[in-house]
Image (tube, rainbow, N blue to C red):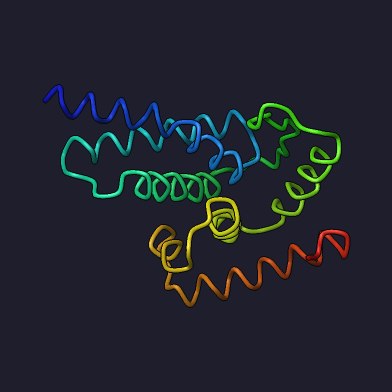
Length: 163
């Protein structure tokens, strides 16, 4: 194995780990599962990295992480609901904590793909076309699912959180 590839991947993994962890947590709402998914995604990324050149590693990493999350949700048979909220921002006020809990509970009612679409659009800031590439749908399907998911979130959150 070439040392250059190992060093490149190590640098990428170290730099992208916090971002991938936050995304995994947003998708699954559980710190341990987020850690497991991030690790699983990094293993898959490494397997691809050592064989070929990856044009946009962060986009590829998000795609792998989202697909791992969706696959894991399909396999999961437990009805456990996580209660821990990690403090990625380094501290929060009581209002921000309540808002986080409320949003987390509302996101819980979305399917795995719809949750991924909402998180990628509003948390990561990707366009419909970029999301379509990452989740394997057409951009029209992404826009339709995003509209339905945000409508469902507005209904669950009520008028207090409607812009």
